[in-house]
Each structure stands twice: as C-alpha cells, then as structure tokens.
Image (cartoon, rainbow, N blue to C red; front, side, top):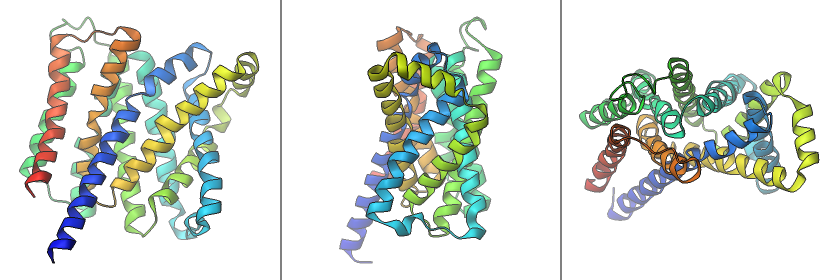
Length: 306
C-alpha cells in the first residue's frame, strides 16, 4: 500500500471518528427536547413516533431525487432492517426517553454509554473484531464512569433511582443491538442512508398503535410555530443527523470502537443539564464523566499514533 492510500485511509478514519463524536454530542441534546414534549402531554412512544416519522419524511424525498437505488433492498434481508428499526425505535429511543424523564440528563446519557460493553463483546464472535488491551481499558473506564454517575457512590443512595437506572441500562442494550444490526447491514453491502431510511420507517410504524395523535394535533393547533420548530429540531438533531453520522462511521471504524467513542454523549448532556435545568453535577459525577472522556481520548490517541 503506497503513502497516498495510507494517507487517504487515515483521513477517512479521522472523519469517521469526528462523525461519531458529533453524533454523540447531538444525542446528548435529546433531553432538552424530550422534557418539554413530555410536559405538553406527549408519552414516550408518541415522542419516538414523531421523532422518527419526521426523519423518515425528510430523508425519503431526498433519496428519491438523489439516488433511488439506495431505496432498494432484498426481500431476504428485510429482517436486518426490522432489527435496526425496532431496536432504534423501541429499545433505544423509548427507554432513553423514559430514562431522561426519570433521571438527570447526565445520568441518562451515561447509562446509555454502557452499550460499548455489550457491543465490543458481541462484535468479537460476530464480526471477528479483536478485543485489544486498549479496548478493554476503555471499557473499564466507561463502566467506572457509569458507576460514579449513577448515584450509588457518595450520595448514600439518596440520588439513586433503581427503576430509572434499570430503564437507562435497557436503553444501552437497545443502542448496542442497533450497532450490531447496522454492522450486519453494512456487511451485506447496504449504504448507511439505506439503513437509516428503513430504520426510521419501520420504527415509526411500530409506534403507531401506541401514539397519542390527539395530543400531537392539539398541541400543534394551539402553538403551531413553537411546536413545529420543536418537533422538527428534535427529529433533525436527535434522529436524522446523528443516526446518519453514526451509521456512516461504521464503514470505516470497528463497531466496538464507534460505540465507545459515542460515549462523549454524557458530557454534552451534562453541560446542557447545567445550562438549561441547573442540574449541577457533584464531584463524583464529574469524575465519572471524566472517566468516560478518558476512554474516548484513549482510542483517539491510538489512532493518532497510527
């Protein structure tokens, strides 16, 4: 391999890392949309439906005009897209929305960061991705960060909500499964945009029976400008853009590494929690977030050495 190819490969990896980090930051903003929607009477599945259906309706005409081939899938592969759709809609978005309501923004995001533990160990047998010392160290840092921010340490259990933590961990499982199904689809030759369009569509369809359309209609009718901006921004910044960026990154970096890098989300969530909701983190919580960040830095330092 000549120097030009090496340089191009390194450049693509750097872009992929940047895409994952940006996706993580966008996911960290979920709470600032979920909470006001919840206050307006939206239940978690209604929030997920609106979020995913708007993303689908934006992406569909774009692909129809730009490249219709990306809308073609094989009938035998439909199970993969059902997997990405259900895990992203139900297991990830539903439980994460519930976690945001039940926990602080920082804690909800950090519990979601348990996904890398599942992804790394599932990717080893499924995709032959090596479990290296660097990955294990990053996983240990991520796990320790989750424990520190859960409220179990230093608060005497006063800030610990067992059901909230359990729901947050279920969101992490959903996140991990989305990564696994997406990797399977990419390995079958599908483009990241193909994965996203079908994930949004199938996820939205799965939520229809549980969606409160009366609440959506009444809130949009009562506050049309505010609600339209809120719903559109919610879908763009927490579904369409981050999912496209994250799935794109899987083309160039390993599934486990991408999952760990996206753990930058708790920091973004914590910052927004402080600015908007004055959720001042304790020193132990800050230490936990620092550990998660250290895992991200560790993986990036390895990339730079290469």
